[in-house]
Image (cartoon, rainbow, N blue to C red; front, top):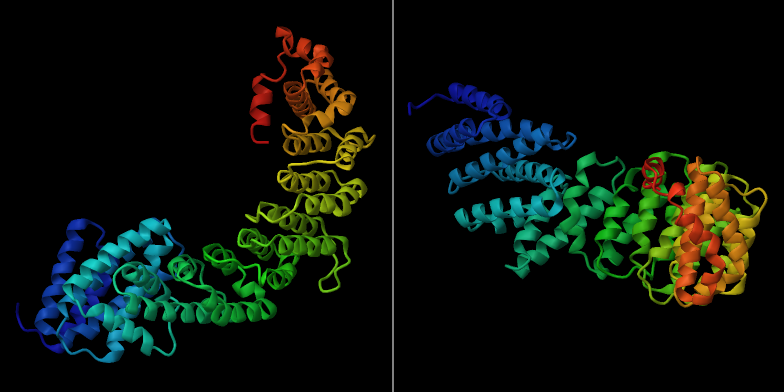
Length: 500
C-alpha cells in the first residue's frame, strides 16, 4: 500500500464514512472490514481518529431512529467494523478522549441492536460478539469498565453496553460484574429516571439486564428516591420507564407500594392518553410485585376513594376515560401473586365498593367495565355468601338492564361460582331461564344470544353438581337438542362472539 499524506488520509476516512451505510451486501462489508484493518495497521494514529470521527457521525444517526430492520443491520455491521478497529488498534497509543469516543460508538451500536431485537436474542448475539472481541483483546473488558468509571457525564447509549457487559460477566468475573452493576444502576437512575428531557423511544429497551441485576438495597438507596422525585416533578418525562423498571425487579415492593401508588395516581387520571396508558401499565406491574395482602387491599381502597371523589390528594374525575382507568387499576390488583388476601377482605371490598357502585351507575359501558373488574376479583373467591348471590339476581332482573350488561353479570357468575358453591345459584333458576329464553326468542341479536349462551352454561354447570336440578332443565335440553334451532352454531354468531 502506497504511503499516503495526511490530506489524502482525511479524504480516505471521509470516503469510508460515506460507504458505511451504503455497503449493504455481505461481500462489500467484508471488503470494507479488510480495508479498515489494513489502513489502521499501516497508518495507526494518523488515521485512527479520522475513522473514529466518521463512525461517530453514523452511529449518532442509527442510535436515535425508530427501530427497524435496516437500523438493526447497520448497527450489527457497525459493531463488527468497530470490533475490527479495536483489534487492529490494539497496541497503538490512543488518547483517552478517543478511547471514550470508541466506547460511546460501540455503545450506540449495541443499544440499537438490543432495542430492535427480542431481549434474549439481542443479548445472545451481542454477547457472542463481545466474547469473541474479549478473546482477541483480553485487557479490553477491564479497560472499558475503568473508562466507564471515569466518565463524569455518561451518555444514555452507555446503558446498552453496560447491559451487555453484565450479561457477559454474570458467570465469569464477579468483581468486574459488581463494578459494572454499580455503574449501570447509577447511570440508569441519572439518565432515565433523573432526566428532565424525555429519553428517545429506543433508549429504554436495552436496560433490562441492568434492572434485573438490581437488588433491594440498590433500589431503596439509589433508584427509588430518584423515581419518587421525578414522578412528583415531571411524570410525563419518565412515566414510560416505570413499567419496565417494576417488571424487571426480583424483590417484593410491599414496603413502598402505597407511596408509589399515590405517585402514579395523578398520571392515571391526567387526561393525556399516553400518560394514562403508562400509568396503568405501571399499576399492573406494581400489582405483580406485592406479596402483602393488607397492602393490596389498602391500595384498592385508595383507588376506590379516587373513583368516588373522596380522595382529597387528587382531582375529582370528570370524564369516563378517567373512571375506566381507575377501575382497570383496581382490577389489576386482583392479579397480584399475594396469597394473603383473605376471602373476607374480598367480600368486604365487593360489599362496600362494587355493589353500590354498579347499582348506581347508568352508563352501559361503565357498568360492563365495573363488572369485568369485579369478575377479576371474584375469580379469587373460593367461598360466596347470600349477599353476593342477591346482588347478581337483582342486577339480572333490573328493568333498565340490557343484554350487554346482563351478559357481563353472567360472565361474573360463571367465574365466581365453582364446584363447591354452584348449588347456591339454584334459587336463581327462574332468573337464569329468563335470560336464556330472551336470547332464544331474539336469535338474530348477537348480544341477546351471548346472554342466552352464558345463562345456559351456568345452568348446565349447576346440573353437573346437583342431579335433581336437571329436572328443571327439560325446556333447556329440548331447545338445545332441537336440530332446527341450532342458534349457537351459526357462522354469524361464531364469528362475532369469538372476539368477546
